[in-house]
Length: 236
Image (cartoon, rainbow, N blue to C red; front, side, top):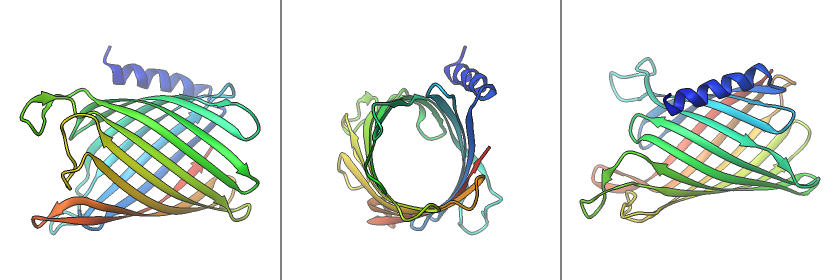
């Protein structure tokens, strides 16, 4: 059986017994790429800490003649994780993911996340993930290899009150083989700030603003990119 269908079957079985389920719908716009993107994430978690999710991403564009109605599948990702509470302030979440991407092919991901509630209204989260691209491509030396990377994320979260949460996210991607990002470096960085608002028990809208330095080459020049995300989480 194909791996992605096997994971889909497992996640469907979990959904039937889910203790907490949510649907996250998010729109995204990259200003320099001039592209829109829509993400749908269905997540669920059992009372024993086992959880999972299915993420479906649709790619749009803002270029002339191709508006939001020009929707194209971009990628689908399946995740399984286990939430283990060490104590009242620290939680560990090992996870495995499988992504089917239009541009990169299949990507297998293994990661570990740690959440630390170090103060009454503050929390620090960290995640380290290894990402293996199964599709061979030519590297900088014109040799066939796997463009594998590590991804490191840090989140600093602050609860303003019972309705509003804010956060800062730093992301660092590092290439493990002879490949490079647009700035010809093996590293790529992101800085994101965001806020969520608890409207009621069901809806939690949010917004995020991201800065991606040296993220792409536009008109033969290296340029920064800016990303705007707006969405809502719907809890069942």
